[in-house]
Length: 300
Image: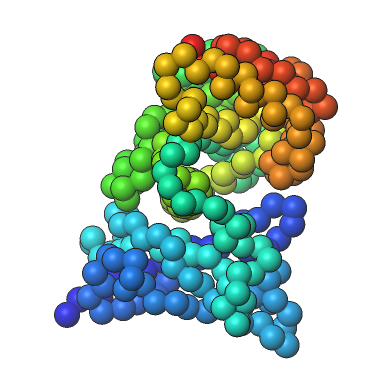
């Protein structure tokens, strides 16, 4: 009989931006199968998900991945939905609203983020008093003069792959201390599970180095690129040859509902979507082939 360490991961109820939470369960001889991951509970009054006089919330496992960084191969990452005490989905549980009946929907997510020095509260590569050189040499950079935090990024990539996440690449981004990783999945629920577990692994990796992760859309004001998560999407009709008419129709429909979409894309996007730094203005809509200043960029 051997001990296994299961790290239960969930999203809290803070607004406007939810944060990751986790706690560890020790069990005997865990199989690694989702069906064998037990339901658990936590104090929702400490995570903005319950009142103190009725504080218990439930953690319902929805995905299990190997945890390669801890416990000699007997560690597991357990992504969970949050339920009310009666078993119904909690209001903060966005995953429960997903209609994910098949894998016809393909997602390629490009998650940008900034590595922050916890002593200066500035991105890695930014001097304590002042700024680094202008943007230009940092994107896909090589060498210590322009690249900051690569050891963290490489370790994160390795751990994600060992966990079975479908990470397809990484690169340094336009601002100093800014990076990106890409994940491809089929199906909306699987997409959400993998990107959140990848973010969790990134946060935990950065803890070891005393560095913080910032996903804020505009971590540095001024002439510096912000961070977003570009979402590449297709369905079967869009992948068929000669699908330009379908692409155009879909883009036009997006344009009719742009404010509804922006409302659920996260807080403070108005600081990033200004029409500068490879973005369209938050109050405008456009699409185009290879156009990085458009709301929707259609790849070549």
